[in-house]
Image (cartoon, rainbow, N blue to C red):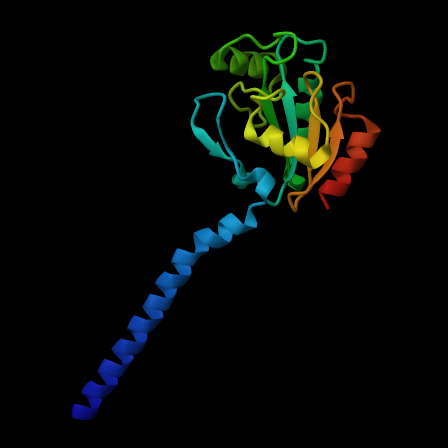
Length: 194
């Protein structure tokens, strides 16, 4: 009986140690996740539809096309092409992120609700959109600071596009006049999805 008690205590100690190791491993997991998120995506922005905070790290491991948008611009029709890209390549790992901005020509004057309604009702936009923010000049949001630093290019108008590959490397910067179905953009996108 005494031997049985020693064995039970030993097993309990081992199980306790294992449980402690499991708890330690679980506690370390968020750190691993944070390390897996590339620096370029380590930002949070309010979601356009409801202002809930969205962590861009949720897009780690995907090819990301970042676009500054506006509702009343000559390039606004690009929403249709961007949504088509998102629909076609989302299953392969593409996400398009829209950042409405009133920086150029004051062409995005509306509220978040007005912008969200316009995008969905006019162009059927389903890709993630964020609340209006500054994308140029000294007050630009942190993601656009990082994108400009990585590429040396800053948006000169609405619908400038940045492409980030699955590893988090910024691999392209495309001016407003580069349409979503442009062969150069599609080639870079195909490569970023690999």
